[in-house]
Length: 267
Image: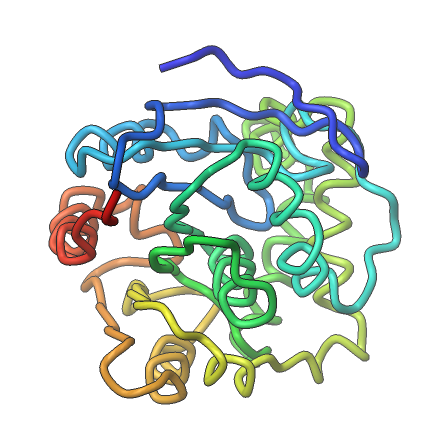
Protein backbone atom coordinates (compact mmCIF):
# COMPACT_ATOMS: atom_id res chain seq x y z
CA UNK A 1 0.00 0.00 0.00
CA UNK A 2 1.44 3.35 -1.06
CA UNK A 3 1.18 6.57 0.93
CA UNK A 4 -1.56 9.01 -0.15
CA UNK A 5 -0.43 11.85 -2.39
CA UNK A 6 -1.98 14.94 -3.98
CA UNK A 7 -2.51 14.57 -7.73
CA UNK A 8 -2.95 17.82 -9.71
CA UNK A 9 -5.87 17.79 -12.15
CA UNK A 10 -7.57 20.62 -14.08
CA UNK A 11 -10.17 21.16 -11.34
CA UNK A 12 -7.74 21.00 -8.42
CA UNK A 13 -5.60 18.53 -6.49
CA UNK A 14 -7.09 15.19 -5.45
CA UNK A 15 -5.87 13.03 -2.58
CA UNK A 16 -5.08 9.62 -4.10
CA UNK A 17 -3.80 6.36 -2.65
CA UNK A 18 -2.80 3.20 -4.47
CA UNK A 19 -3.70 0.10 -2.44
CA UNK A 20 -2.18 -2.36 -4.90
CA UNK A 21 -0.65 -1.90 -8.35
CA UNK A 22 -2.51 -2.80 -11.51
CA UNK A 23 -2.20 -6.50 -12.24
CA UNK A 24 -2.13 -7.91 -15.79
CA UNK A 25 -5.63 -8.88 -16.90
CA UNK A 26 -7.28 -8.19 -13.54
CA UNK A 27 -9.55 -5.21 -12.94
CA UNK A 28 -8.36 -2.28 -10.85
CA UNK A 29 -10.88 -1.44 -8.14
CA UNK A 30 -11.56 2.31 -8.02
CA UNK A 31 -13.30 3.33 -4.78
CA UNK A 32 -15.73 6.28 -4.84
CA UNK A 33 -16.78 7.49 -1.39
CA UNK A 34 -20.10 8.71 -0.02
CA UNK A 35 -21.38 12.29 0.11
CA UNK A 36 -19.55 13.08 3.37
CA UNK A 37 -16.66 10.66 2.87
CA UNK A 38 -12.95 10.55 2.09
CA UNK A 39 -10.13 8.03 1.77
CA UNK A 40 -9.84 7.44 5.51
CA UNK A 41 -13.57 6.98 6.07
CA UNK A 42 -13.56 3.75 4.07
CA UNK A 43 -11.46 2.32 6.94
CA UNK A 44 -9.90 -1.03 5.97
CA UNK A 45 -12.63 -2.20 3.59
CA UNK A 46 -10.84 -1.29 0.32
CA UNK A 47 -7.61 -2.98 1.44
CA UNK A 48 -9.52 -6.12 2.43
CA UNK A 49 -11.39 -6.30 -0.88
CA UNK A 50 -8.24 -5.72 -2.92
CA UNK A 51 -6.32 -8.39 -1.01
CA UNK A 52 -9.11 -10.96 -1.21
CA UNK A 53 -9.91 -10.37 -4.89
CA UNK A 54 -6.36 -10.20 -6.24
CA UNK A 55 -7.18 -6.97 -8.06
CA UNK A 56 -5.31 -3.71 -8.17
CA UNK A 57 -6.89 -0.89 -6.21
CA UNK A 58 -6.96 2.87 -5.81
CA UNK A 59 -8.97 5.09 -3.48
CA UNK A 60 -9.31 8.87 -3.69
CA UNK A 61 -11.12 11.84 -2.17
CA UNK A 62 -13.15 14.06 -4.49
CA UNK A 63 -12.76 17.83 -4.49
CA UNK A 64 -13.95 19.28 -1.18
CA UNK A 65 -13.24 16.12 0.82
CA UNK A 66 -10.40 14.91 3.01
CA UNK A 67 -7.03 16.32 1.93
CA UNK A 68 -8.21 17.23 -1.58
CA UNK A 69 -8.57 20.85 -2.63
CA UNK A 70 -11.73 22.77 -1.65
CA UNK A 71 -14.96 22.63 -3.59
CA UNK A 72 -16.62 25.65 -5.20
CA UNK A 73 -20.10 26.30 -3.80
CA UNK A 74 -22.95 26.27 -4.52
CA UNK A 75 -22.94 22.90 -6.19
CA UNK A 76 -24.74 22.56 -9.52
CA UNK A 77 -28.02 20.64 -9.61
CA UNK A 78 -26.37 17.92 -11.73
CA UNK A 79 -23.16 17.57 -9.70
CA UNK A 80 -23.30 13.76 -9.74
CA UNK A 81 -23.59 13.70 -13.52
CA UNK A 82 -20.73 16.19 -13.81
CA UNK A 83 -18.51 14.01 -11.63
CA UNK A 84 -19.31 11.05 -13.88
CA UNK A 85 -18.80 12.90 -17.15
CA UNK A 86 -15.77 15.04 -16.33
CA UNK A 87 -13.96 14.57 -13.01
CA UNK A 88 -13.83 10.77 -12.90
CA UNK A 89 -12.67 10.32 -16.53
CA UNK A 90 -9.89 12.86 -15.93
CA UNK A 91 -8.69 10.95 -12.87
CA UNK A 92 -8.79 7.55 -14.58
CA UNK A 93 -6.93 8.89 -17.60
CA UNK A 94 -4.25 10.45 -15.40
CA UNK A 95 -3.84 7.19 -13.46
CA UNK A 96 -3.72 5.23 -16.74
CA UNK A 97 -6.04 2.55 -15.40
CA UNK A 98 -6.57 0.02 -18.17
CA UNK A 99 -9.52 -1.96 -16.74
CA UNK A 100 -11.37 -0.08 -13.99
CA UNK A 101 -14.02 -1.66 -11.79
CA UNK A 102 -15.91 1.14 -10.07
CA UNK A 103 -16.83 0.50 -6.42
CA UNK A 104 -19.02 3.29 -5.08
CA UNK A 105 -20.93 3.99 -1.87
CA UNK A 106 -23.97 6.31 -1.69
CA UNK A 107 -23.06 9.40 -3.81
CA UNK A 108 -20.07 7.40 -5.03
CA UNK A 109 -22.37 4.57 -6.09
CA UNK A 110 -24.53 6.98 -8.06
CA UNK A 111 -21.43 8.46 -9.73
CA UNK A 112 -20.20 4.97 -10.63
CA UNK A 113 -23.53 4.08 -12.25
CA UNK A 114 -23.70 7.39 -14.10
CA UNK A 115 -20.14 6.92 -15.32
CA UNK A 116 -21.08 3.58 -16.85
CA UNK A 117 -24.21 5.09 -18.38
CA UNK A 118 -23.04 8.50 -19.60
CA UNK A 119 -19.27 8.32 -20.09
CA UNK A 120 -18.02 4.75 -19.74
CA UNK A 121 -14.25 4.71 -19.22
CA UNK A 122 -12.17 2.68 -21.68
CA UNK A 123 -11.98 -0.92 -20.53
CA UNK A 124 -14.67 -0.57 -17.84
CA UNK A 125 -15.14 -4.03 -16.32
CA UNK A 126 -18.18 -3.55 -14.06
CA UNK A 127 -19.84 -1.43 -11.39
CA UNK A 128 -20.43 -2.22 -7.73
CA UNK A 129 -22.88 0.30 -6.24
CA UNK A 130 -23.53 0.18 -2.49
CA UNK A 131 -26.52 2.19 -1.22
CA UNK A 132 -26.75 4.27 -4.42
CA UNK A 133 -29.49 6.73 -5.34
CA UNK A 134 -31.08 7.07 -8.77
CA UNK A 135 -33.96 9.31 -7.58
CA UNK A 136 -34.95 11.25 -4.48
CA UNK A 137 -37.31 9.70 -1.91
CA UNK A 138 -39.05 11.13 1.15
CA UNK A 139 -36.90 8.90 3.37
CA UNK A 140 -33.80 10.41 1.75
CA UNK A 141 -34.81 13.93 2.69
CA UNK A 142 -35.93 12.87 6.17
CA UNK A 143 -32.51 11.30 6.79
CA UNK A 144 -30.70 14.40 5.55
CA UNK A 145 -32.82 16.67 7.75
CA UNK A 146 -31.93 14.53 10.77
CA UNK A 147 -28.24 14.67 9.86
CA UNK A 148 -28.53 18.45 9.39
CA UNK A 149 -29.97 18.83 12.89
CA UNK A 150 -27.30 16.57 14.39
CA UNK A 151 -24.52 18.49 12.65
CA UNK A 152 -25.71 21.89 13.85
CA UNK A 153 -26.29 20.63 17.40
CA UNK A 154 -22.47 20.66 17.63
CA UNK A 155 -22.36 18.23 20.54
CA UNK A 156 -18.94 17.05 21.77
CA UNK A 157 -18.13 13.88 19.84
CA UNK A 158 -21.10 14.51 17.53
CA UNK A 159 -21.40 14.65 13.75
CA UNK A 160 -19.58 17.97 13.32
CA UNK A 161 -16.62 16.81 15.38
CA UNK A 162 -16.55 13.46 13.61
CA UNK A 163 -16.42 15.04 10.17
CA UNK A 164 -13.83 17.62 11.22
CA UNK A 165 -11.36 14.79 11.90
CA UNK A 166 -11.35 14.01 8.19
CA UNK A 167 -12.15 17.29 6.43
CA UNK A 168 -10.49 19.87 8.70
CA UNK A 169 -11.21 23.49 7.82
CA UNK A 170 -13.31 22.36 4.83
CA UNK A 171 -15.88 20.66 7.09
CA UNK A 172 -18.56 23.35 6.91
CA UNK A 173 -18.41 23.49 3.11
CA UNK A 174 -18.25 19.71 2.83
CA UNK A 175 -21.41 19.32 4.88
CA UNK A 176 -23.22 22.16 3.11
CA UNK A 177 -22.32 20.75 -0.31
CA UNK A 178 -24.19 17.58 0.62
CA UNK A 179 -27.03 18.58 2.94
CA UNK A 180 -28.00 21.91 1.41
CA UNK A 181 -27.81 20.67 -2.18
CA UNK A 182 -30.12 17.73 -1.52
CA UNK A 183 -32.58 19.93 0.40
CA UNK A 184 -32.94 22.53 -2.36
CA UNK A 185 -36.57 22.39 -3.63
CA UNK A 186 -35.49 21.93 -7.24
CA UNK A 187 -33.36 18.90 -6.33
CA UNK A 188 -36.51 16.95 -5.39
CA UNK A 189 -36.99 16.32 -9.12
CA UNK A 190 -33.50 14.80 -9.60
CA UNK A 191 -33.99 11.42 -11.25
CA UNK A 192 -31.49 9.43 -13.33
CA UNK A 193 -33.37 6.13 -13.40
CA UNK A 194 -33.83 6.26 -17.17
CA UNK A 195 -30.06 6.45 -17.66
CA UNK A 196 -29.59 2.96 -16.22
CA UNK A 197 -30.78 1.34 -19.45
CA UNK A 198 -27.68 2.73 -21.18
CA UNK A 199 -25.28 0.66 -19.05
CA UNK A 200 -23.59 -2.20 -20.90
CA UNK A 201 -21.39 -3.73 -18.17
CA UNK A 202 -22.30 -5.99 -15.22
CA UNK A 203 -23.67 -4.22 -12.14
CA UNK A 204 -23.97 -5.43 -8.57
CA UNK A 205 -26.29 -3.14 -6.57
CA UNK A 206 -26.16 -3.70 -2.82
CA UNK A 207 -28.15 -2.09 0.00
CA UNK A 208 -28.95 -2.54 3.68
CA UNK A 209 -32.60 -3.36 4.34
CA UNK A 210 -32.77 -0.68 7.05
CA UNK A 211 -31.02 2.00 4.98
CA UNK A 212 -31.96 5.29 6.63
CA UNK A 213 -31.63 7.24 3.38
CA UNK A 214 -33.44 5.03 0.85
CA UNK A 215 -35.85 2.18 0.26
CA UNK A 216 -35.07 -0.93 -1.76
CA UNK A 217 -36.78 0.78 -4.69
CA UNK A 218 -33.34 2.17 -5.48
CA UNK A 219 -31.48 -1.06 -6.18
CA UNK A 220 -34.59 -2.76 -7.56
CA UNK A 221 -35.05 0.17 -9.93
CA UNK A 222 -31.45 -0.11 -11.10
CA UNK A 223 -31.62 -3.82 -11.88
CA UNK A 224 -35.05 -3.57 -13.53
CA UNK A 225 -33.78 -0.99 -16.00
CA UNK A 226 -30.52 -2.70 -16.94
CA UNK A 227 -30.31 -4.86 -20.04
CA UNK A 228 -31.28 -8.47 -19.22
CA UNK A 229 -28.67 -10.44 -17.32
CA UNK A 230 -26.42 -7.50 -16.43
CA UNK A 231 -27.75 -6.62 -12.98
CA UNK A 232 -27.92 -8.28 -9.59
CA UNK A 233 -29.43 -6.82 -6.40
CA UNK A 234 -28.16 -7.89 -2.97
CA UNK A 235 -29.88 -6.97 0.30
CA UNK A 236 -27.95 -7.06 3.58
CA UNK A 237 -30.22 -7.77 6.54
CA UNK A 238 -30.14 -5.79 9.80
CA UNK A 239 -28.10 -3.11 8.07
CA UNK A 240 -28.33 0.62 7.45
CA UNK A 241 -26.73 2.95 4.91
CA UNK A 242 -23.11 1.72 5.19
CA UNK A 243 -23.09 -2.06 4.58
CA UNK A 244 -19.32 -2.22 4.03
CA UNK A 245 -18.74 -0.79 7.52
CA UNK A 246 -21.65 -2.40 9.36
CA UNK A 247 -21.38 -5.91 7.88
CA UNK A 248 -18.05 -6.03 5.99
CA UNK A 249 -17.77 -9.82 5.97
CA UNK A 250 -21.21 -10.24 4.39
CA UNK A 251 -20.43 -7.57 1.82
CA UNK A 252 -17.12 -9.20 0.93
CA UNK A 253 -18.92 -12.54 0.55
CA UNK A 254 -21.28 -10.92 -1.96
CA UNK A 255 -18.67 -8.97 -3.89
CA UNK A 256 -15.91 -11.54 -4.29
CA UNK A 257 -17.85 -14.05 -6.48
CA UNK A 258 -19.09 -11.16 -8.61
CA UNK A 259 -15.54 -9.92 -9.19
CA UNK A 260 -14.23 -13.44 -9.81
CA UNK A 261 -16.96 -13.96 -12.40
CA UNK A 262 -15.59 -11.11 -14.48
CA UNK A 263 -12.47 -13.15 -15.25
CA UNK A 264 -9.31 -11.63 -16.66
CA UNK A 265 -8.96 -9.58 -19.79
CA UNK A 266 -7.07 -11.10 -22.73
CA UNK A 267 -3.56 -9.82 -23.35
